[in-house]
Length: 304
Image 1 (cartoon, one colour):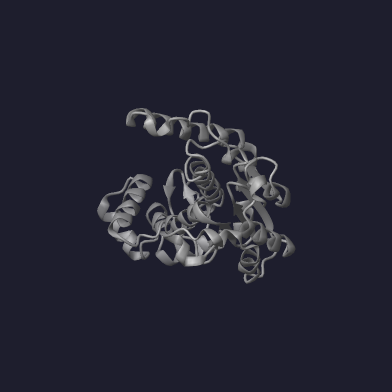
Image 2 (cartoon, one colour):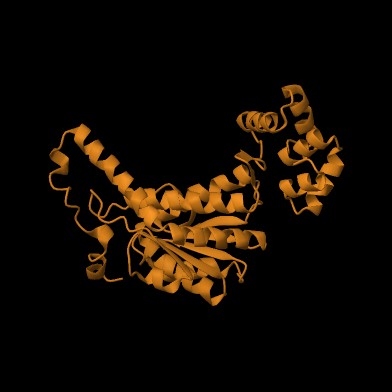
């Protein structure tokens, strides 16, 4: 996108309250920045129907065995990495099912590689390696909606018949036009002109949280408000698994601990063992028969 066109983007415009920002008392500057973040949430509310549609597609892709790939550059890509890095342990997701492709690769995780975002061919090549199909979902994240790396990736995903999503903070962008499902969170000008790590980034982070969490709830990775597929890889997560089972079974810590140890710290079979008084092997077989659905297994045992 030519620089002259970029200047027309709302996220690149001058904020009416930014004049004299550097001369304001610190307390006033903090208040202004905080108010801007609240404005990002209002923009998210306006995009609610689009977010619901994408969360539904996300869940459908996961249930079908597809992969979900986030694609972004700079702040947008690192926000994608933050989301996908936390999903496996939270929801027991197998490696590779949900990933982020970041312009500039691993080096761009900890430092800015600004030129990487301009390489549409690199975006296309990054996606081409995955050999996608209609069960896969590709989510392009770009505040401007014009990032070449993201557009190249989306173009390749479209050619492979994957479902494509675009998250952008501007209206009438190329990204909006080329994806199947756009999410437009129009956050407007930043207090620091063009610094979309601010409220545009806040909006992107919240949208990604909504999409992944709602999708995982939809595919029954959560029971009531509990992480029933958490991977207890450390002491904190083992305590969380303990508290989850104690809350769901009303049993003592000793009973809960024994069941979790027996199942290798897997919450779902441990819960079935306790509530239905069945063996670990029977609990695991039942979950397999119910395609991992805890509610389905409990219904089959008539213990809902």
